Length: 112
Length: 113
Image (cartoon, rainbow over all chains, first blue to last red; front, side, top):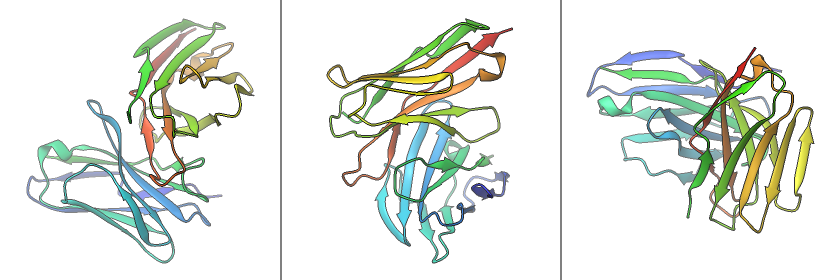
């Protein structure tokens, strides 16, 4: 059974640019969450989607947005990148919201 | 009230020893407490999880102890092995509408051979 797939694995962007990260959940999983991981702040919740609906959003600026498609695949977008956006972005999926999330290996974003 | 406090920040244990990591929370609405293990370059992997109606759960060498009145829970790794060397995160969540995990700050475990 394939795990959670995140693409790309690594990304280098310039300050001011925008970026789109992709997540393919485990087949059959309808709940998808995104987390930002940094050495200073740890794992911080970004958003949660279930059946294409965003049900919760973390305490991040409006530059961070996301969406979920009908096949449960999800994307997150960060506009006007700042140096502080450099982080590992993790996607997680679950059959039922909250219980037993499976994480992908993440996308390492570096903003220069 | 949304925080989960995790300690210690780092831990060194001899092979065969017991590793103990502690977490504390404030929000009594939390009703699901998972532990994740993360190796460098990988995403966190679910190890074991517990709900408040159970005081202890064991899976292989990993045991969660849960103290509802103290609002604390801990992970015990028995017979620790060098392959257990990783960062461990506790988390808490509530089914009542927030749909998110609150993670602890992580514990970097090193098991010496």
